Image 1 (cartoon, rainbow, N blue to C red):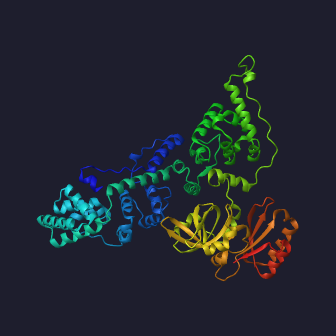
Image 2: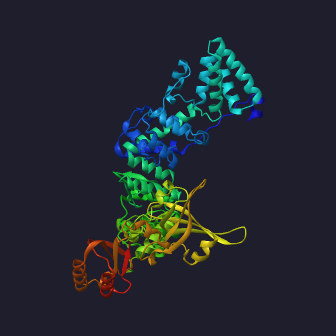
Image 3: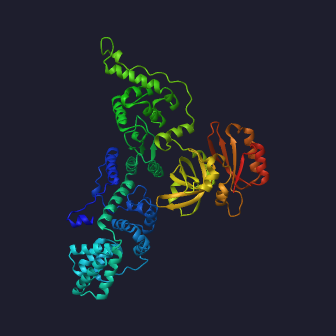
Amino acid sequence: MNALERIGLLKMDFLGLTTLTVLDDAVRLIQQNRGVAIDLPGLALDDALTYAIFARGDTTGIFQFESHGMRDILKRYQPTRLEDLTALNALYRPGPIQGGMIPDFIARKHGEKKVTYDLPELEEILSETWGVILYQEQVMQIANRLAGFSLGDADLLRRAMGKKKPEEMAAQREKFLTGCQARKVPVKKATKIFDLMAEFAGYGFNKSHSCAYALLAYQTAWLKTHYPVEFMAAMLTSETGNTEKVVKFINESRSMGITVLPPDVNSSALNFTPVGDSIRFGLTAIKNVGENTVKGILAARETLGRFTNFFEFCESVDSRLMNKRVLESLVRAGALDGLGAHRGQMISVIDRAIERAQKLQRAKESGQHGLFGGGSSASAPPSPEALPDVDEWPEHEILAAEYSTLGFYISGHPLDKYAGRLQDLKAIDLSTLESRRNSEDIVVAGIIVQLRPMRSRRGARWAILTLQDRTGVCEALVFPEAFQKLEGILKAATPLLVKGRVAVEDVGTRVIVSDARLLDQVRDPAPNGAANEAAASATGAPSLLRVRVSRSAMDAGIINQLHELFVSRPGRCRIAFELVQDDGTEATIDAGSAVRADRELVERVRQICGSDSVAVVQ
């Protein structure tokens, strides 16, 4: 950089921002879906609903304002104008944070600290930042107004302050004080102001940069507020291939009341697209399905109007674009579920369907349309073959196939069947991990989607797990001591209940694992009683009686016995039934009544339903 300056060259940095593409895509989708033309540069900058998003800290997907720390500041600051967003962009950096500027700035905003100016001339320059020198441009304005610096000289002063070279600073101080004296500014005040400029210039931010970023943030927030479906579709498209981000934005969409529809060859486009008030999954987000293949599918769909069966689909799409791996991925992702067959049937005839499609397409290309050429009966497509009568895949296999092709679960989640139990065990959602304090003890649940074996410097084995629940993804560190006792249950696709502590690090917020258990084996509180302590009432009395029974075994006789027993012992302990279906899935049902869960009642329930059917949660 210095060498370029010495030879008179200009260095310019150009930032490529994904956000610009998101904005452009969202505007295009709004035009397509709503017929409304949005002029982003012409947006009014005083929309109260948009600023309300910032004030709530509801900033997932909002440029530069997504981090937990920034959300906390937004809630405390309550921005109401673009200047507020500009200032927060400049403040949320290591220098101002470590210097304690943010609490002082918030106090000034809310009138909790009086704003004063050493000279009347400073009010015009510093009023928008509550009397604080925050921007590099303010340093230049002060030098210009108080000491008569030209804007070029003022820029040299700014640069000298940033570099903090003693000889340059001494020369600039003398020039500033001389200029102030000529304009009758008291020496004492001039010295104080120069020292303040020097202090803040060390981490003063460029206002034009901060303002440009604030404008982009406002535009993304405006779109999220007024056109949430199109905005989230654009966000999801921008993160295609980044599983963690896609899971995050799908969960954000659902929390906003937006349904994310699964991929469908009769409805999906290349990317995520709005369909009314829902978002349809894009076909290019399916693993092994490339853009050329999707374009071939869309071309065939445009010709046919709609695919009606599996064989027709295979025969209509150019076979050069549709090999076995691509077709399997489409089936496993559920993109062909609308063709009148289930996934087990389609997988069982893939080889035959591809062979038949290739034969028909070769015949068509070679002009074999019948003996006399082109007769209507000869050119009519053959009838589809009957599909074999095979069983549909079980739910766990369907979900595993979706995960392998989409990178996450879309038609359900393996943890869905544990939802009631996890609530009782006080397991927190992984999406809330960033809001937790460093070293806070927590209980989480998740599926192991990745496991990386590691070795310490001393050769001890440990592991980094990637856990996923219904709301997000996180990394969990299992250090040697914990790994030694937990190694047997640390396997891919395993649902775990994990006890640990929060670790806030530069790479993100992670969990340090101290204990874990297989969720299938959790009948009572979490490891080492962590959830028991969290769920215990002030009196220490049981809060929930959980009765686990097979659905097929729940006949009228058992129901009547339990009803009579529970009616005879009213109390404050809620009752919930875990009904286990024949396929292994579970459903939790609240009985809507409460009992006195003493030892006698528990023993009686065990006699009726089985010795291992009861768990008492404190």
